[in-house]
Image (cartoon, rainbow, N blue to C red; front, side, top):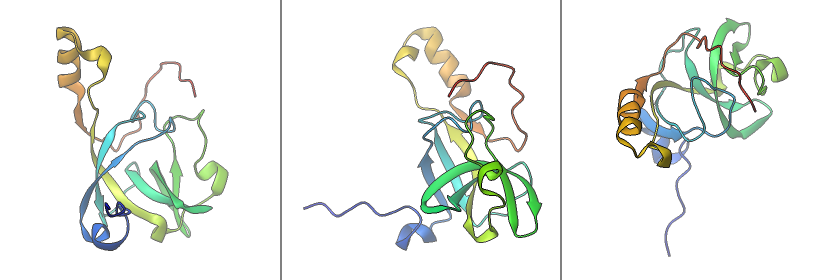
Length: 145
């Protein structure tokens, strides 16, 4: 019988400084998309503008990815890059420092089935791996939930 998968933020996995996590949901579009893989560093210093992994303050078994907007009394004010998706400090307030677990260092966007053409592969190769900027994306595209 296979052993259950280890929760990435407990036990031996919690001692690893770097881990890979997968994005689900639209709250960080256009910076991050559903299915993107993130290289995160536990315990890294957080600065305003950094993308971070945190425990949801009201549902601590849920891990979320947000942008650390600013330090406030009691912790960090975090925001999603997609203002239409919600689920950030505008809903639950300041996030205590101890709930901010890791800083995102890089994003890997897996190849999609519709990118199998030569031009699709070239486009993917140019954008598949990127350092996650500490600047909020300034996209002017329409964003849907």
